[in-house]
Length: 318
Image 1: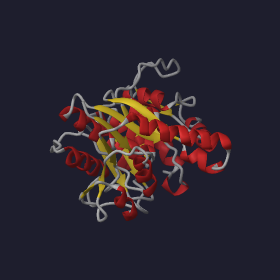
Image 2 (image 1 turned 180 degrees about the vertical axis):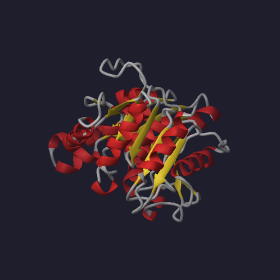
Image 3 (image 1 turned 45 degrees about the vertical axis):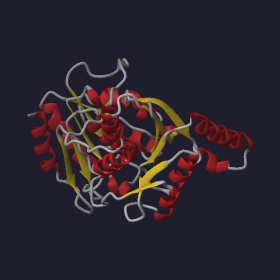
């Protein structure tokens, strides 16, 4: 039974984009033991896939704040020792960064990754035993699937299956009837969709008997969600959610509409009809992609109009 380690550290969207590759791998090697190294803040995500038997948290974002702190040195040493003790048959670095390649090297196992023409940081490819060519013009999901397939010697199929199984958690605060999740927050202000348009969309949903639910992360995002919800009769501002709870919330929704953020990719991954709004980036290589209803609207400097989003909502509900 091969023991395989996936190295995909961050960010949320990138981690989610690697899940279909795990589904493919598990289908072709059902007896494989799959582990995954991921930034500790995203450790819940690989655990949502039943084929991932062990998630190994990586805390670089926290460690690098005080690299010389004794407690951090101890944690880094324990992380290295844990990787070496597993004795992997193969490590697949789908991130293609020097930091992910160095994590892979800690295992002492053979490593597969992108060749220098396919990779984001060419220096990282020197760490790999298998250097695999995968076009950079493909969507991130297709790149991950092809890299893993070529490393393991199979051909991926056409259908996209994220394999996500949201936990059966009780979200007692949720609306009892139909609801739509509005993902209004993102880390960059230039990626935000205007609040007035969110209000207009919420009103349109309410006329259809669908309650808007607005999650948030940080304090500024909570305040934004509350401002929008205050103008929508019956709208619900969610409490702070763990990623598993967010997956459950999204999976049970009628649809999700969101800006360019990790949670909009999680919506596509759990199979809910998803509409992604792009205002300051292009969706071609990293937009939402799924076998079900997943639509990308807008682009760099071209935020989608409210009427365009409402038309996509009508298509999702149909």
